[in-house]
Amino acid sequence: MTTTQTTVAAGTHKHRRFAEATYYWMVWPFIILFAIFHTIPMLAGIFFSFTNYAGYGKWHMVGLSNYVNLFGDDRVLHSYLFTIFFSLVATILTNVISLAIALALNARIKARNLFRGIFFIPYVLSMLIIGYVFQFFFSKSVPKIFSAVPLLRDNILTNEHWAWVPIVIVTVWQACAFAIIIYLAGLQTIPADIYEAASLDGATGFKAFKSITLPLIMGYVTINVVLNIKNFMQAFDQIVALTDGGPGMATESVTLQIYQGGFTGGEFAYQSADAAILFLIITALSVIQLRYLNPKED
Image 1 (cartoon, rainbow, N blue to C red):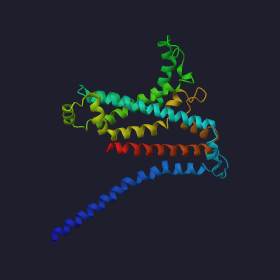
Image 2 (image 1 turned 90 degrees about the vertical axis):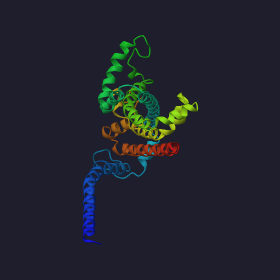
Image 3 (image 1 turned 120 degrees about the horizontal axis):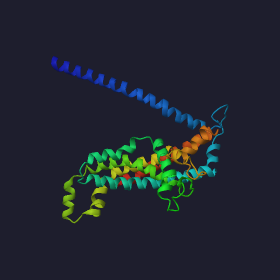
Image 4 (image 1 turned 90 degrees about the horizontal axis):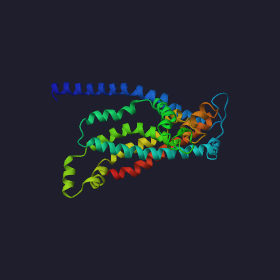
């Protein structure tokens, strides 16, 4: 090896070591912060779920008692049923509406980027603020505007059978903002000549969507569905702002119940067990969705 080659090799090795050191100096602070604010609290919560800790004072281990009691708690069961029902309805509506809007925007429409920016605005707004705005709208404006409609002439948020509808509307309205952008990104990856070739075989309209568009964007469908289910299963802000879980417990989600019982009801350990179960359910749903949807991407 010549002197020049030796110098180049040494310089390359030195540069590689510097790049590796820079990488670790950039990554490790965020790993440490993630551990401090996420991993350690999560592990602490799991630990306390096996105790009788009320959030203050002394505590001792109680084993699986909290988990056993959860399965016999009617309030917990109702909150899970409501949360799952709400998540499914909101996920279906979000993806159907978002995909329809994305297909329209992806067509030859002028000012496509302008509309894309407008549709994304709800996503950058605070859900809590949005919830309070819509709370005023559903409780004050709707009864006045639709006074001739029996269901809407009163505050629908106080109707135990229909109070979930405004929550779904607000949730879908904001969630569509992000889903539209994802679907637009997927639609723009499909070459136009595929549709031209398909049209020669008579595949147009819904047939082209079913046979070409949908299979080619299944990866983006998977992203949206998994994220939607995960986010909606943890719904909190919109429910607090609109109904605070009422009327009664009609719209009480799992996360709202965990917050109310764990931080204000002296059930810290009990609700820690509830949170652990919610984590397992969300993880299981995500795995099931990925196992079902991933083969369709192929």
